[in-house]
Image (cartoon, rainbow, N blue to C red; front, side, top):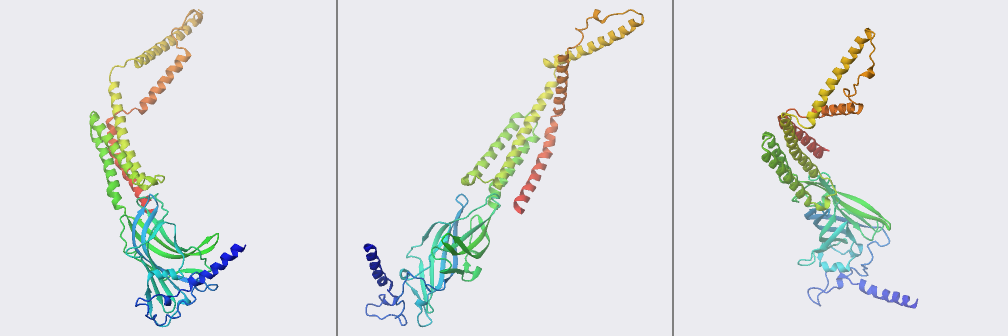
Length: 445
């Protein structure tokens, strides 16, 4: 207990001596004998940089403005952007009022002697203050006690992106400024001139994006320790789709059209049609792999470009399957012209035997009827017809074979050349229809 009291007493003795350093007592650049500037004699007398202005009273109003120098990179993989900004903060400290109507720009190192807001950038991953050739900070003091504090910062800020419409997407990102320790009872944040407080957004030229619009918001952040003031700069970035049209959409569309060339090649040209089909399928696979490798960390999204490449791959693969069906049908038709052998001949023989059996059965029945009129009774047991009739399981087997033969003949293409003929019309027609639906959905919905 005694040690704690001794430490507290020593701290009380030490802090006032450090805090009472005034701007008027700083060494003058003219030399030791030079006097202070007129009106600065009582400046910061008893000033305590550890206490905010109006301590214990009304909150300090801090007005901010931004100059956006550049947005150097926007990463879809990491979902962030890097921006260089000039942040300007204005507030009034009545302890720094001096006579006159002048303003003075002070050495930035004097910021260590003043109270400054504890502003930080929300969702910032990395930030640094520029130090070339000196620390890029500015302190300007006005006679009414207003302080302008400017910083040049480069920061990488998280930006949650929805890539389901990539590359026809529009992303909304934010730059949020908030007080770290002072809640709304101590400080309030406002934009200096509303939307005009942000400059430089109109002049930005980005490689893949265009700044659609931006606006400023004033909000509050409710935390466990209190409610903190927050300023928000929200801007919308629309991706330039022309690059992706030339890089991906046009090549994939041309590959689909190339696969249709096989429809004009005869079915007998097996190497030519097979080469076109396999080449287009492999080329589409390469395009799909290349488009996904550029955004390897976002493969959990089904993007618009993935949907289009999947459509193109389906049409290319369908053209290859079409040739396989047409060639198989042509081979079956050629085989049908040859004399039947094997199971086909057995089926024909069974049909002939059935016809003979039916004729014999009908003849025996009529013969029995004629004999009955002459009172000559002929017992059916005297005639053995077992060899002339089919057994029950053989009849069922024959009926099933006949049904299967009819079903197969129904799905058999009678003229294989018609497959190519219809494909020449149906493939382009369906591809155009799918394109209309695709572009209408992703551009207008």
